[in-house]
Amino acid sequence: MKQEYTITAYTENQIGLLNRIAIMFSRRKINIESLNTSPSEIDGIHRFTIVIQEAEDVVRKLSRQIEKQVDVLKVYFNTNEEIIWQELALYKVPTDEIAEKVKVERLLREHGARAVVIRKDYTIFETSGHREETDKLISVLAPFGLIEFVRSARVAIIKSSKGFHEKLKEFEQLKPGDEVVENEYLGNRNDVFSM
Image (tube, rainbow, N blue to C red):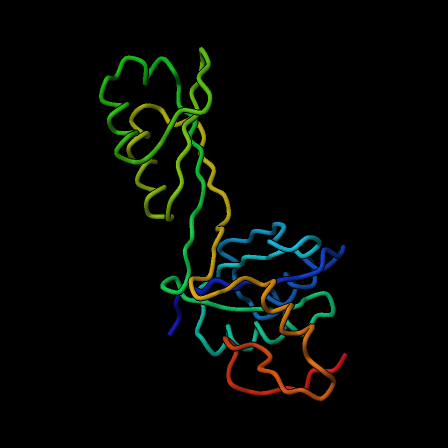
């Protein structure tokens, strides 16, 4: 059964890696709902956050395939219940339309939005939350002449994670021949870690 999964990949920041990862999805005809790359908590290590709708076995195989890439250090996949996530949204509306409406301020407060730019011809509001929450504000602002809308990719933190720096410490303490669980989210198989 398909459901929404968030794949988190810790990688080196190498040219061409994004393209190689994207090809893995297109070959399997998997649509990427959201893609975010950013620095991680470790200097020089980047974090890919990829959202897809797929069956668990497909996500498991895909995550293993991504983890085999030379520049990829670790890959996890999680359901929405296992992560804390947000998306940022911006809304551009005509200033003259909303300036006359007293109810707009109350509506924006109800949706956790705030004005980030106010100009004579337009005002830009910002909010963050889950996709359903940011979509609701579209319908609220549409009657006031919504000019433009954009939503960012998902940013997510795994609830049970102690941070990737802890994983690196574990790897640094291993000796050749030690057995480790390659990826606790990818199953229970043990692999030999060699330096």
